[in-house]
Length: 457
Ligand code: PMP
Image (tube, rainbow, N blue to C red; front, side, top):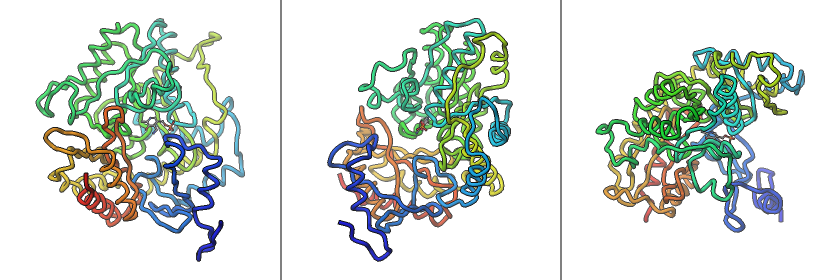
């Protein structure tokens, strides 16, 4: 069964066969449809599979490999730390955790206390617990509800999934954690309030106050919000939206948790996504780009004044939450190096420039009959495909699938996101590494444009 090809590898087929026996891939229908790429090498923004096919990865893996796949400086930083001190729990401390905390404060532009975990989901779980405990210790133990949005994604664990506003991911696993309430998303293309962009009162932001009042403010602990909804279909809010939510939080005593798992670390063209909107969150959660995806690490950064409530000698006042691997010294050292490289190479600014270029290159698609909406935020893009521009009927799954397959045939990997319940899984997503050249970015854009133009209903 193993046919050795001219590069000396055995090719993908035998590995796929073995994979089929033992590996369980999430979000993947079984049994027949699975034909995974056996990825074997990465170089800059490219990945190569076991058959020697090379692809330009316009999704940075799962929205995370911002520095590309072959950054030796990251491997060296990890190796150095690995041989010096590979593991110790954060019941004590180590230099990488401290250095990273300091660096994150600089990037956040404020004074924050940093709690480390391993994934975005866990960072959000920690944020919910911190918010609830903060209120409890502040004399308001009944503040426990968390408000999030329909269409948002905040993770796969029972609390983060409860915060998630995508029914298709949830209904087989209910009951989830109680206490999560949802408001409509700021979806200007399919406005839940029937309004037109620019001709509304930003009712989507008003909803927070309404819902908090309906729930009774004294029972609400926090809102959790991504600067833009990424995985739920690249939904970009009106410019004043986040500030309005911040004002509601201030009026009602509700904490503002901003989920920067995708938007953080330069993806938005600023160090963090919220910095585009002139707000300062109470809690910021982050993962993915913190290590450019090279190792698992996440963080929950809590405003210093909030942390003060946890400075109490009373037995149960401390944060009773621990995880074995959170803040692993190797992952922290790698994260510090990631942020240093971004600073040395001005990659946040570069991401902003690349984002503007991508917007300009894709703008011709506005006139295309199957493109309902083009949405951009920093170096992220979403292209909502429709069957009919007037009715906004979503493009069929077959049409969207053809576009993605055509891009892959041309050597470009792109993503697809949205909401399968309402047949709105019709948003193509682009999130390329910051190390792409102008020419590579133009190739990505041109490939997507041609793929949309040549796909058929
Ligand atoms: N929040 C957001 C906005 C995300 O996009 C994701 C993952 N895509 C998560 C949280 C969960 O992160 P993880 O998969 O690392 O648990």
